[in-house]
Amino acid sequence: MNPLMRIACYATVFLSLVSLQAQDTDEAESEQVDVWSAAESGDVEALQKLVKEGADLNTSRADDQQLPLALATRNGHAEAVKFLLESGADVDGQDADGNTAALAAAFFGYSDVFEALVGAEANLSLGNNIGLVPSSALQMDWGFTNAIANDALQLGLTEAEVTEGRTAILGQMAKFDFGAAIALGDLDAILSHIEEGADVNALIEGTSPLLIATIQGRSDIVSALTKAGADVDAQNQTTGGTALAAAAFLGSTEVAKALINAGADPSITDYQGTDVIATLELDYETTSYFASIIGIEILPEQDLMAAREAIKEMLADDEEEEAESEPD
Image 1 (cartoon, helix red, strand yellow):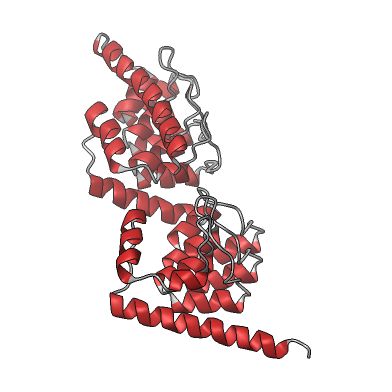
Image 2 (cartoon, rainbow, N blue to C red):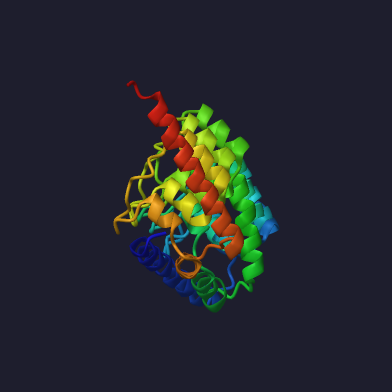
C-alpha cells in the first residue's frame, strides 16, 4: 500500500474508532439491551428476541452510524454475524465512512467471520470512502492494527492470531479476487480468473501481476500470465524495473527462462538507467543492501552468482538465435 493511501486509511479508521469510543460511554449509562449492543456483545439469544419483536437490522445506531452487523464483526462474534445475515442484515451495509463488515473482518483477521460474509455474497470490491477494500486491509501493519484492536478497543488480539487469520482470509479471497490469487500464488485460482477474463495487466498496489509472480519465484505463474497476454516488458510505476530485471536481481533462473522465452527485452532500463545486464553485474554486497531495503530474501552469494551467470548464458543464446533467424 502506498504511503498516501495508508495515511488516508488510518484517518478513516480513526474516525470510526472515535464513534465507537463515544458509544462505549453511552452504553455504560444505560442497561437497556438494544439490537446494536446485543450485536456488539455477540448475544445471539438477545438478538433472536429482538428480531422476533421486529428490530430493524439495517438501521444505523443514531449516535455513531454503526450497523449491528458491523458491530458483531468488529468484535469477532461469528455466530452473531451468521444469525444477523440469516435474519436479513445487509451483508454490504456501510457505516458513515463507507466501511463494510468484510473490510473490518479482514482488518482484524477474523477468518470465520469473513467466511460467513463471503458465504452471504459480500461484495469484496466494495470500497470505503477512500477506496479501501478488504484485500488492502490485509496489508495493514501490526503496529497500527495493535493500536486499534488492543490499545483502543481492548480486543486482546495477538499478532500471530491476526496474521494467521489474514492468511486464511487471503486464501478465501483467492477464489473471488484475482489480486488475492496473485498475492497468494494460487495457480489454480489464477487460471480460473484468467478463464473468466481477468485483466492480467491490471496493477495490484502499483505492481503488475507478472512482477509479483517473478518476485515469488513462480515460473509456472509467470508462464501462465505471459500466455494470457501479460505485458512481459511492463515497468514498475515506482522504479521502472521489469520482471526480467527482477529475475536477474534475484537469480531466478527458471523465471528468467520463462520471461526470455516470452520475448522479454533485456535492454529496457529502469528510471536509474540500469538494464538487465547491469543488474546481473551487481556485486553481492550491493545486492544484499537493496534486498534488505525492500524486504526480500536472496540466495547465498555463491548460488546467486552462479544463477546470474546462467541467466547471462540464456540471454546470449537467445541473442544468437535471433541473429540466426534474421534474413541475410
